[in-house]
Length: 259
Image (tube, rainbow, N blue to C red; front, top):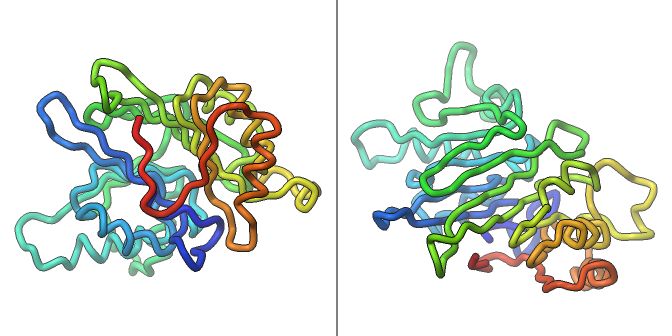
């Protein structure tokens, strides 16, 4: 986990950013970053050279999930390492390229294309990244949003395939159920609290709703993330335990989940 704070960087964590790594048969390590929210680029550099990231998958275009793409563009464009321009592939919702350009403040006619190659997610259409396969699933949020199923080789047995399902930001919906089905790990946001936030729907999960998705999908392990600084993580865990009997963790910066 690079950053796991909900909605804005917290005192102990950057906003959403998750590094997924897998080796292919030749031993080459492939790296995918799911979201690059505010504050995440700095922490990401503790784990990997950002220029060595093979693909960035954006769940949606709220700043706490994509703002540091502006900083990544600066890193790739102006780093004095020399040689050919460094490019990182980005997949995101429709409008991703223009949103990044507007956030950075590009002049009319300028492009980030020499450094960020942007593609649009097509729901249900997998994207191959070395030994990993990423499948976007449309979910419910006030803006176009996707969860991502990441399938790849198990760390202890490369012949066995495992699935990490990342919800991005969503409320309970059919897409969430599809995303979670049979996943080894469900990395689920739980920004809202039962009772406190009941009047607001169509934006976020509670711990209970994340647990219901995990139980319904027969998920192997639930990891709760995207908790705002004003939430108590114990509340989210308590809610999830009421409906899900499997192991539950709370995401934390530096946390490693082996599949």
